[in-house]
Amino acid sequence: MNEKYIEYWGLKQHPFLLAPDSQMMYMAGQYFECLERLKYAINTNKGGALIISEDAGLGKTTILLKLIDEMREEYGDSFRYALIDHPTINPDQLIAHITESISGAQPYEDKLKNLSLLKSALTEVKQKGGKNIIIVDEGQMLCGAREVLQELRMLINLTYNNEYLHTFVLSGQKPLWDEIKSMPEFWQRLPVRYYFYPLRLEETKELIKFRLLKAGIDNGKEIFTNDAFEIIQRYSKGSPRTIIALADLSLLMGFSDHSRKISFKEMTKAINAMAGKGESLPYVIEDRKKKSETPLSIFSNENKDTESIKQIIGYIAQERKDSPRNMSVSNQIRPFFIVLAIMFSIIAGSLAGYLYTNREKINNSPIIVRKEMVVVDSEKQKQGPVENKVVKEGTPEIQPKPVKYAMVNANAANIRGAPNIASPRVGMIFEGETVKIVDETIGPDGGRWYKFYFYGDREAWISEKVIILK
Image (cartoon, rainbow, N blue to C red; front, top):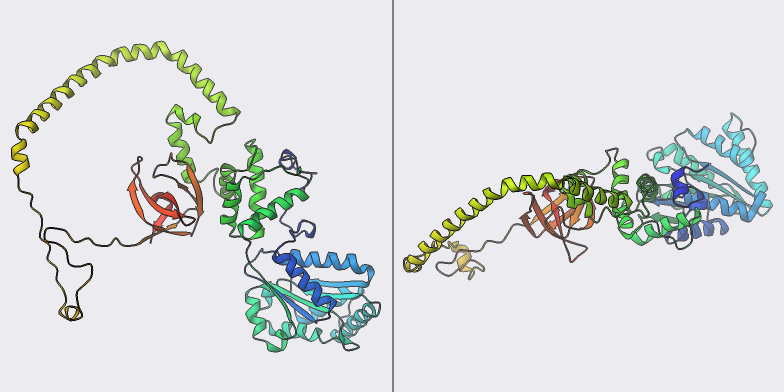
């Protein structure tokens, strides 16, 4: 039974479950290429394959499940496999586990008997024209466990009629790559290799759209805005596991807010929920507080739904209701402002008269300019003139501005088109990202703002409250 938030978005099943699901696998780009290499290793009896990912959560396990599904569909009962996804066991336990998976029989306590039973089962499948696969996932856990790795290497040596009886697939994170490479006798037995990298923005978009389509969304219906895709990509750094988790949380946040689409607001809440914090990020809360100080805040771009219209109507009604009281207050305040205006006019007139009377003295007053002294090292003087040091008398020397960098120290930070918290948001950057500062100023709120270029040539400003200067 689906939760209400799944039904709210018009989906028939969960699109973003974290458990590896080969049916939800986005088979494009590097995933398609990896699967083809694995099938090539199996069909040509290459002996072994090595799959490595740059980081955790890039889809290794899911691609292995996809491989098993396709082999089972192609070979039926003539396909056998063993999948070890927790390899931190001793060699005897490892052999027993593989023997049980391939043969379907209860393994012996004796390792030698298990190896004999395993070879018999592998040979039987081979004679029927079938395929055998032995897969070890999470192989990075075996780094340093040379005894277990050597046992796995020896399994590849099982042959029949000068052909390997099975294809051995070793999968893990990048430390495994160096570990196996330091064992030439093992590295050479894994001639088919593939290395996964994080997804690009376009691949992230396609992955989310593909999963939504598989979950039953109407073809052509768009749930995520471009802003949402960009935020997911930057926060996840292209990790499919994080992409899926964040997309799922954003659907829940959108359901809670009765949103029509997933945009900046929903993504902000989802990121904070993933970080285990409150409803919204600190600067978003500050935005809301500032906007709530004036009734005009109800006309902001972020409040276009029915609730906002109700607030507007309620505000106007309250203004009308309070109008007699407001008029009486204004009648008391008006004389004070009249007196204040008369006093200001008198002071301004006196100042203007003084400036006109003494204009000759002011124009003829000498302007003292500090004379700059340029000191040049005698050794450097021998080498020729010093650039950017000689200045005209009376002109101060211009020193180059030091280069500044700002690093985001919040989970995520808004960047705006102008140095003002009320200015439209033009993007978002995440914790740990660094930008080069090209200008700075004080905003209307009294805080300091820093200017940088976003996506190459797009001007953007960021508040000092969410950065650390480097």
